[in-house]
Length: 272
Image 1 (cartoon, rainbow, N blue to C red):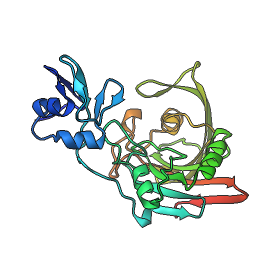
Image 2: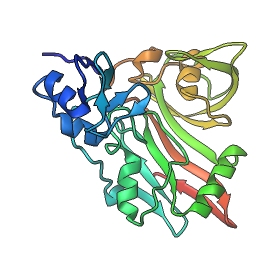
Image 3: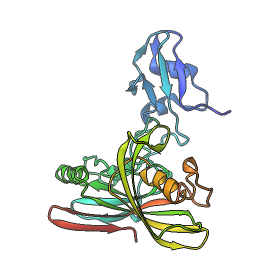
Image 4: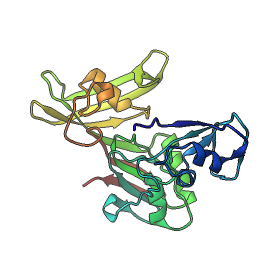
């Protein structure tokens, strides 16, 4: 049986949220676990109160995780850099950075909070798509959080990505792309969009795959993915933008490094 995600549950009578879920959910889903995970929504409101009284005809949306009750935990190998101010954590393909409609806990940020274990829940300063791997920055206290967000606002955190695309004749050694992007189901170039600026520099190629360093000067959603597809070639595995299947997970794009200055210290963080 293939279940839709989300499920739409309509209460047939006045009853509690938990009773409604237990009456109407398919048997393979655990109502109490869904409430605990944060997958139950009443309108735009996260619903975690099992005793909340629904009226007849009111609806719930239920997002379910293939791994119910999962709590993401980072390993020491994922901590690429750490000092008293911040840490840089490697996010694998397929892992989300923050909470989703499905789960409050099955994400990188929850794992980082558990790793720090100090009662401070650090927000991600940088974000990556679920299909993209690489480094995510986290502050270790409120003062550093404000400083990092200020650097982000002022575009003073330099970001280095590595993208692997289909190698074909005529690909340039160097390509600067300046366009305007909008976003619907996917990113697309548009005269009315927001400015997007990327720089691609070829690192290697073998006739099948070409690897490019990518430096971005704006942070539009899917910017590298659409710029590569439109002006060079699609990234391997990036099917929404024309990429071919590949043997890896997610897509062949990773955030490989950051340069910035914070609290008088110069940071140069790289995946080794």
